[in-house]
Amino acid sequence: DIMRSLPKKSKRRASAIQMQQRQKFAMVSELLNGLQPVIKRYYGSDGGLKTRRNQLMSYLLKEALMYNDPDFEWDFSKVLVSRGDLLGVNAGSVTAVAGGLLDFTWTDNSAQGEAAATDKLVVVVYEPTSKTTVYSLDAGTRAAEAASLSLPNYLTGLVVHVWVLFATVDDKRFATSTYLGTTTV
Image 1 (cartoon, one colour):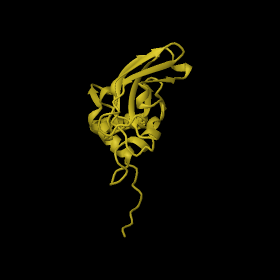
Image 2: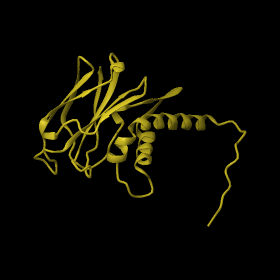
Image 3: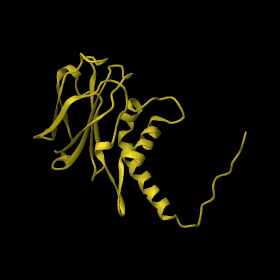
Image 4: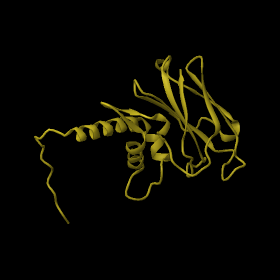
């Protein structure tokens, strides 16, 4: 057994590289806070040394943040909200309609691989200026080929980023998320 004391607060100024790393870490943590219920169920595996949140944080720090002097910016097309081996969404699209509603369509591919007609659609919507995350863990089934999600009124007129995935009814298998792009609510 080894015992260690708490670290002492340093009086040294952080280097430019340390400040950049802190900025990246803060941005990723902020995004992940709203995604926690989705990550707990649908990202990677639950075993090993890293938690699901830490697996996603590692991926996002390496792949989804781009440096644009002097700040970092998200490349939302590289952001994943799930990572699994179930067959994903085929030909998915999202359309904003009146009343803060998002309509989703896709092609039923339940005859391929281990995909089932009863797989449920999971939807994640993120608005970056207010840092608002809205999600549904069961928006519809794979066989339905269409679903809708109602968003809060305060998101009306704002641009949102949208991801979708399929998960089995028991949540034991899930697909890697598909980024559907942006739409204005």
